[in-house]
Image 1: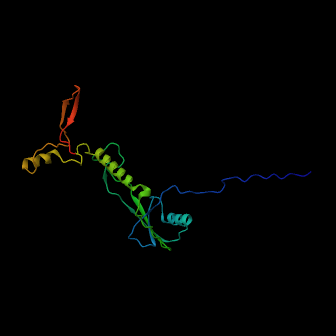
Image 2: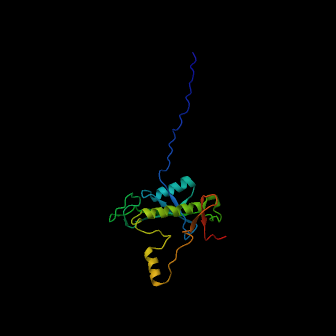
Length: 195
């Protein structure tokens, strides 16, 4: 009797695949030589990890690695705190930077002159508006007068010293006279209209 050979389908996903669960940031430092690259790395990453990461992911052979940990300045209250609590001192987490010496030079690409593809104007306006809103919500933000107008005290001082004379702004308060039409209906007539 002939025996039948049964072949099994190969199992999928048997090979171990390790993906990094950290973020490495390449810093643009114009003072560095093209043979050096500076990185912002997590605190638990060591020199051998960075060397292996660059070689296995990007095929970059590394000659040497230098690392240092930079302590942050002491701040009053935490950055993302919803309620500001004065007199609570906090030191943000330290930053670890590594500098790598490479065999092949790496030159950063030139920054483009036309940023219309990325809508840079809109992004800058949004950042200004966000900064203005953050400043208004921050400590003492409600007590600060808006930056668009002078304070009332400065205006009063200028009036008292005679640098400026008191006058009403005609653009802000336009004179309006109401007249009766021939039909007996009232209509508004503007004065001081510039044509």
